[in-house]
Length: 304
Image (tube, rainbow, N blue to C red; front, top):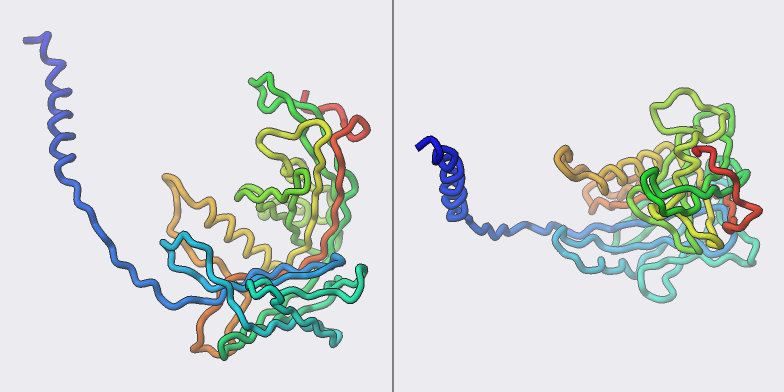
């Protein structure tokens, strides 16, 4: 009997699992969809060329289709020096575009404040944002390295150099492009306070810390002759908090996930009892540098 005693726990487990498999219940939940809301995707910069504001209507949570465009809106941006910029939806697809008078004309200027006004369906929405200062990207270099210490596969790691502007707390967003394609994973939402991450020591006026300088890399690293572009965008504190909250919600999962929360917005309906909008109105100054992975841009790997 002693030789068979080890079977009892196994038999017990099988009986428990069998009983649980017979207790499945399919729940078909009927969820209210609620009213649609205006969704605003507006990032305007100080760079030459057209500027675009994308307006859509929100869709139910379980609707995986493309949100419908918000059509027939009047979209105006004004600044604090009296200039007005009209955005029109020429293609009737929800993309409202301002066209400059010349190839060198810019909408955005550092130090100015901009107000967005949207009239849609008898309701008026407003938001404001300032364009803050931004540092230049001093250089962009590459180093040949292994994908990880245990791998024999090698690639090229990019590293850019930027120094925070001294004298005030500044907020930035980093974006990067691989062969002209914006890299847009959740981990590619890279935001910076002064020269480091929020909560770090005082880094006012310092060189961006190494984890930020090296944050502009894909998992597989780069290959020889690829082209990399790095942008530094200025942010307001409100825009910094928006990107921080958005990144948190996108990556919120796993065993220690927190309850979902609304991402903040700086857009309001002038009618307090009207439909509440979602999205954000951001204005940024942008500085960038582009480099190709060729011999003159390759440096020794200081981690070896």
